[in-house]
Image (cartoon, rainbow, N blue to C red; front, side, top):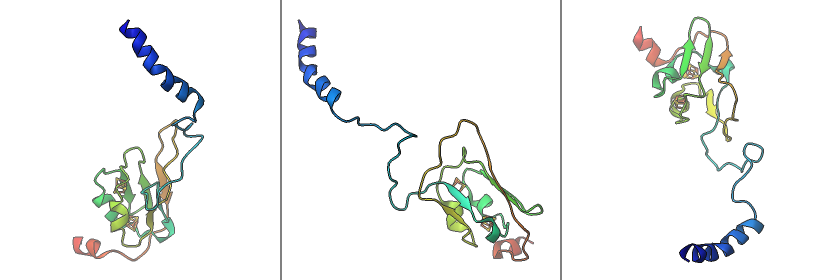
Length: 129
Ligand code: SF4
Ligand code: SF4
């Protein structure tokens, strides 16, 4: 008897949901517009990078690796928490976060970039010597 009442009470909801638009999206096929100032995918304008390692030192997830001799910069996007600390601390402002989230991937991959060694170093580096 009680079950019959529950089914009776649920029926309008079931019918409404049946004919109304879906509350969810077919992600990743359908995405919603991102909000302003969203901390999305991390990117390095490698031509401006001086390989000072500040980003790697400040990163709380330790997902950035910088090779100062080979002039390479890499980041594991699956470990990154998109906090933006590296972006805030980059002395050359060559790190930035796009206004959109990283696309889902079926395989793990690392962001790898190769640049050129420059003479310029940060104050932090000079103090270390
Ligand atoms: S802090 Fe900026 S300039 Fe320094 S290694 Fe990182 S990305 Fe390059
Ligand atoms: S956004 Fe945060 S977690 Fe990701 S690389 Fe930069 S400092 Fe590390």
